[in-house]
Each structure stands twice: as C-alpha cells, then as structure tokens.
Image 1: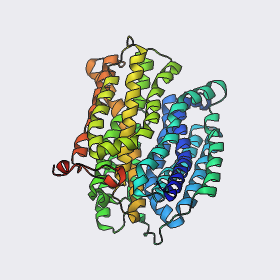
Image 2: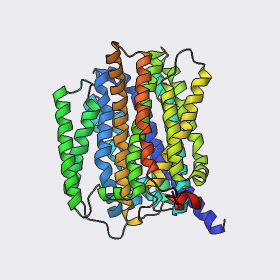
Image 3: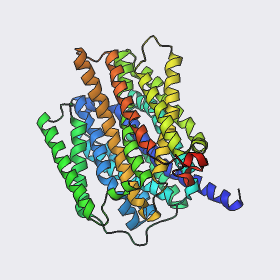
Amino acid sequence: MTEGDERTSGRTRLTALIVACALFMQNLDSSVVATALPAMARDFGVDPTHMSLAITSYLISLVVFVPASGWVADRFGTRLVFRLAIVVFTLGSVLCGQADGMWSLVAARVLQGMGGAMMVPVGRLLLLRSVRRAEMVAAMAWLSVPSMIGPVIGPPVGGFLVTYLSWRWIFDINVPIGILGVVLVTLFIEDIREPRPQRFDAKGFLLSTIALTAVMLGLETVGRDIFPVAATWVSMGIGLAAGAAYVRHAGRHPQPILDLSLLRVRSFGVSIYGGLLFRTGIGAIPFLLPLMLQLGFGLSAAQSGTITFVSAVGALLMKPATQTMLRRLGFRNALVWNGVLCAGLLAAIGAFRPDWPLVAIYAVLFTGGLFRSMQFTAFNSLAYSEIPRERMSAATGFYSANQQLSMTLGVTLGAGSLSAAAWLSGHANPALADYSVAFAVVAAMTLLAVPCALSLARDVGAEVSGHRARPADKKV
C-alpha cells in the first residue's frame, strides 16, 4: 500500500467513525425507549399499550422525511445538513426528556424523527461520496461497528436509568453525544454537494408522504386497540391508493423523489427486494425473543436482557471479517449461502426451551448475530456498488426508506404470526409452541430473499467486494 493509500484509508476510517457517532446515538435511543415505556405510562397516567405511539410517531417521521434527505443534501451540502440533523435530533431528545404528557412526547418524537431521517441517510451519503469504490465494504464495516454498540449496551443502560434514576435520562444521554458529533463534523468533514441539484419533486413528496404515513400508521396500529379497526384499514387503503398514484407519477416525472427507475440497476433492485424480505424476517427478533423469554420461559426483564444482547455482540465481532469474506465469496455466493444459514438459525430460536443449556442458547444467538451482520453489510454495500455518483443521493434516500419500512413489517409479521398461531391452537395466551410457529414463519420470510440473490451475476460488484469469479463461473 502506498503512502497516499494509507492517508486515504485513514481518512475513510475517520469519516466513517464520525458518521457512526450519529448512528450510535440513534440506535442507542431506539434500544432504550421501549424499556422506558411502562415508566412513562405511569407518569403520564395512560394505558401502557397507547405509549406505543412514542415509537410509531418516530418511525413515521423517519419514513416521511427520509426520501427528501438526498435532495436536501444536494441542495445545501452534506456537511451542513448532517450537522443540522444532529442538532435537530439532539434538540428533539431534550424535548422528549421534558415532556409532561403523552402527546407532548409524541410531538417531540416527531421532531426527533425529522433529525434522524436526515442524519442517517445523509451521513451514509457523505461517507459514500468520500471514499473510493474499492474501499466501500471497509467503510461500511467501520461505519457499522460503533453504531452496533448501541443495541449491545442500550437495554442494560436503559434498564439502569429507568430503575435507579428516571426515564427522562434516556433522552438526556443523547446530548453529550450530539455535541461531540457536531464538533467532529465541523473539524474533520469536508462539505460535499452536487453542483446542479435536481428540482424538488413536491407532488411526489406529498404522495409518498401520504402513502408511507398512512400505510405505516395502519401497520403500527393494527391489532393494538389504539384506533378503531375501521380507521386502521381505512388508513391502509388510503396509503395504498396514494402509493399507486405515486407509482404513476414517478413513471412520468424526470426526477421523482423516490426514483423507481433505480430498481432497473440489478444490484440495487436485489438489495431493495431481497433486503426488504431479509430485514422483515430479522426485524421480528427484537419483538418475539424478549416476549418468549419473559412470558414463555418466565424470566425477568433483566435476565432476558442478559441473553438477547448476545446477538448484537456476535454482529459487532463479525464486522472486521466481513470484507475478507466478501472478497473470497463475492456478493452472490455470500448472499445465497449466508442467507440460508441465517434462516436456519432464526428458525432454531423457535426451538428454545427452558431446559436448554444456557450455553446452547448463547451459541445459537451469537452465531446468528455473526451471519446476520455479514448479510446486512453485503446488502448495504451491494446496493451502491453500481450506482453512478450523480444518482447516489437518490439511491440513499430510497434505500433508507426501504430499511425503515422493513422494521415495521418485521414487528407486524412477528406479532401477527404469534397471534394467529395462538388462535389456531386455542390458547388464550401464546404458548411456547406458538412462538416456534412464529419463528418458523419469519425464518421463511428471510429465506425468500435467497432467490433474489440467485438472480445476480457471480461477479456482481467485484470492484467493491474485490472478488473475481473464476472463468468457469462467469459462464453460468
């Protein structure tokens, strides 16, 4: 490696770690909020089930504003927007900690979501525009390491703060992280912007806002008794109608806010379709596993937390080895075979029983975290491997919206599968066998991503992964 290459690699690592500060803050926040919902409900004097709006409002805000993030970054510069997004997210966190009721908390969460919607995709865009394609996998791995610490430390930190201090502290801990992020961005990040940003697609933004908001609201409230059942289905109907109108609009607009023509790039399309299926299945784990351990096994929340964090540890440890694995296997082979392993390990969680040795449970969760981590990095890197620089902002907005949607679908699929299994078996409350069925369903959803990967060429994204298919393979 030449001296210039070393400087470039050092700059790549620094940029990735600075951007990762924002991802760490968002992931830490997401992993501690659920822990505090019962305490919030007691303080506000509301039904704990209605406090799910504190999560729903944030997710909807994310999904609505993520598609506009690319245009805003192109128009005003990635450094300025990224820095402002951190400020907005931190301000929203402060207001969450000062909320005196559920609806003031919801309003603050919406503001926080606006900052998060700009912070994460713009940070990723900043990184992608700063590195060479050959460094993309390494950059994504460096980006993921600090951001994945949040899910590891979030549950125990959140539990400690809620139990011994106050739930308001879970939002206040974002303040020093946000200040550090702003300082580092100001000192070390270059301002990168497109010289001729595209015209803002106002009509497309309105249609996509209605579609995503209505569908997300329907999915987040179905079966939760927050709104009347009819209102939930009307919301989803409106969302689907607006979505159909948007598809028609996007086909006619030269630069739509969610550019569906990007799906014609095979590597990006597979990352969208396959990634949605894979993340939907994996997204059910944070919902199903704690319930099974606490309600099925009879463990306490603290005992459950000491088990569930093991997957995040495995994911964290896998990141440094991901680039080497992708160089040897290539994107296609990695996504196919690793996808099968991920589905099998996900189904194995449903076989857990109270009499299992704890070391066996740890082994399954840890190994599953390893392979899922590699799959996430592979999808994330493949998505941008063949996207031209001038379309990178549109691609990041599209991809980020897809990721947020899959999170909601994962929880919905997990909850629906568990309820259906309990109803079919005649159980008033889900039994362990019902959890097994639910995990089998979400594992099958994850496995559906494998055929998407099979449609890829064996040497797809070789410039990014460093993999070179053998001549015999290229003929396949």
